[in-house]
Length: 386
Image (tube, rainbow, N blue to C red; front, side, top):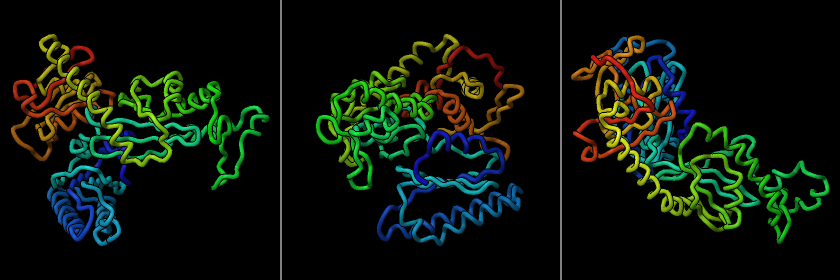
């Protein structure tokens, strides 16, 4: 599995058994790929040592570790890697994600998965959706600065105009035929595979929009359209997603490969994402001191846990160890990691993302007063930090 979806992240974040999180860089090609299983073997050994030290071993967890070890000798698995591998192990089994950016090697054993290294997947200054539209083909992608990956169309999204209108008036079925390879019907209007009937195209796009709602309803990720010029305004009319961009990629996308689509989409989305990030940072400065923004980690953690963080900024490599007591709604910060502590910034990032907040990364030089995290709240919070 490669693509890390929002639902995948939610599943990982909800685990509360003994959880092993392994991150490692990976080699994609050539003789260097021989390093991959060796590196993974060493990290598995480190995980086993930590589990033994913490006395967290169970028969179920041992079975999952055995399943993970089986990958060490899987030659084909290591020949098909991306730049980084995230591997998650608990009593329920193993999950792994090949990701288009490298990781520092790390092994974490805790009562929850360690997810902050996945920040490039989560942050709002990096990702976008791309929807390619033609009357014969619909494709859906999730992209980032690093790459673009096609996503299976959600149930209810028609893959073509013919599919969308197949239950229309039977007389219209005369306009379809199945003589093309694969017996997929092609709609005929003004030329093969095309119609200029805007009402029919609008019904087609209404079905696409309705079907995408299941994926996009909780998202704020920008969506870019790609299609011939006259189709884009029709989809804009059908659209109900608030983060659809007005600017799209024009031209027939049917025979454009994903790398070209990625390059064109990133040229559109990059200035948009940068402007959104700068606007959010300016809003933080405007609200600082009003009770609706904070640089105090105790307040940020409490706010994130309770769904009150609208926007969170963190430095990518920041860590802060401590505990959060949900019942008392209080935070304790430690000077260093202990057996019963967790990374509070990892916790804040995860909770903010899961509850619909925006997450951005900042260089340390951009972070006000050298803090590791700052936040804008949906409404002021009140807590008693320890």
